[in-house]
Image 1 (cartoon, rainbow, N blue to C red):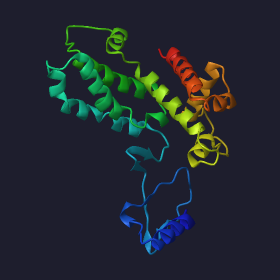
Image 2: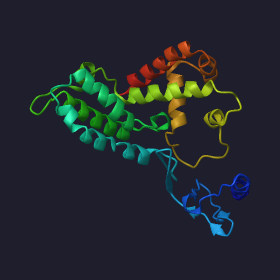
Image 3: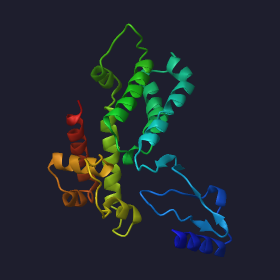
Length: 246
């Protein structure tokens, strides 16, 4: 990393650019090496988390912090309170506004989330509350979640996240073999696991969904080259995940 940092600064200087010391940070993942990374005479700051393209990356390698931050969609929903109360707008229009302005914030970056039951329940609870508010359903009125989703033409949050994930995977698999995004997707890190049950990771959840659907990774790579066929495969993978939900 020290060599790469120096090279970055050198190449940037050739075109009149300078690396901003205050905005450049270092995060070490499972690395015992603590030698500071320097840029000229300045040491770069070590951090446990940082925000990249709107998503929070943490030293634990998980996505819990990013998912918590996504609940800031609550602020967007509250800001649009006049829209939800409006009698001049129909329910379908309100739902379109919800999908484009609230749900897009809620599920931003969800393609790479490691979703657990706890986080999915939090996301689903928030979404259900928003939908009930749009339909003006207040206590003691009641509607079960299944009818709520059918009325508003919404899928469960876990299915929506899974659909986004596999669409993104298909898009990545259609990229050239030398593309860095594809390398990251197919990279198989070497080393030994710690003693104990391995954590559920994003990659393991993908492999489990593939196994449940009766496909192999090589089959998916071939299917992804045909966009029409991939949509069918992706929906099958989403249905497999949805059947496993309690």
